[in-house]
Image (cartoon, rainbow, N blue to C red; front, side, top):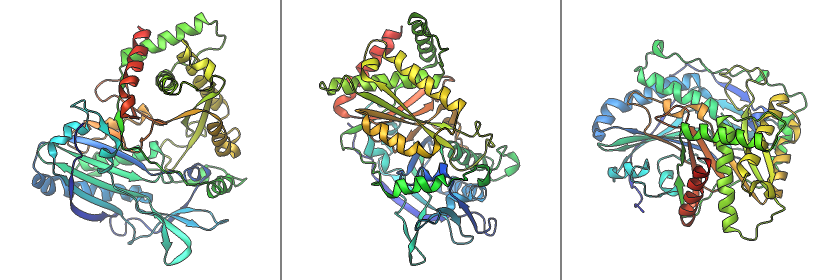
Length: 463
């Protein structure tokens, strides 16, 4: 396994919206935002090929990268602000202070540029989870606001650019989920990239501005306070990975996805299922990878409870269902929890059982997207705690991460860095093929060969 890359920091600075372009503004958290109060920070990493020296990047690319970020923050000002956390029963809010707030911006250089190919997976050597973390910045913990211990504030975003001389460059962004969900964050990154690619000429940026109208999400019963109290009464989540955990990026090509859809549809017919199956790319892909991980879990836990349940958690975007504008900025995700009996999913037709359960959960969401909203968090925690093994999904092929072009081409690789344990999976579109799916997961090194065998056997069974 390759050694860690070493980096040296060239610059610690900050970027703000253009002076006077954004007034001091506060945005209350909706209950969709409050869900994420205890969530660890999101970390997205983009790798780009860039065959030039560090001096060329510093002189010719960096100024435009920072200027375009400033112009993007003029539109997406919450990322330059802070989360304000007053004591209960007061409501948390996002606050931007004109002239004071900014996004920390770090510029670093890799002292082992040849490691770029290792980080993007070209050498096919297992990549330790810890290796990616040095290319995304950390957000500091909440601090007292103006010396007032009764109210704390937390920065919401930081950026790190790392240059691999004569090989490539990475752009790492850490942000708080409280400020934005994946769709809103993708809106920001594509806007920043488009402004950068156009050299700051906004007339060439055909991307709509964000919509901050919090009054579009009605909350007459104060659901935000229910969620906030649940967070305050529970222990904070910590995202820790063991030192031997490595990243895998299995890919399901479009032909394999289509074969998977056809095979699951055929199984529905063979089993005389009465309900019309929902066989989207998301459903069949997640069903397949979930079953692969369950089989790995079972092989490592011979005494697993055959009468227990396996749990899957994924997120559904509510914008369309609530008739919100597509460019609504903030969070608008419902956690959907799927529980399947071990006796159903651990057998030959496990993918069918998984696909059916996932599809039915999505159908239920489409009919009543806000059903039981008051108990979303408490119910999810209850089901997860009762299940013997659970997996959560982050990201979506619909976010189109490989379209984030700052002017030096599409990303050669993009990673969700906070995927650090076997309980999480990331999803994205494949870079070079429409209709394929790229997955990201973390496994102990000792389980890699076993998982790969299960994954390949599953694909073989499809054919």
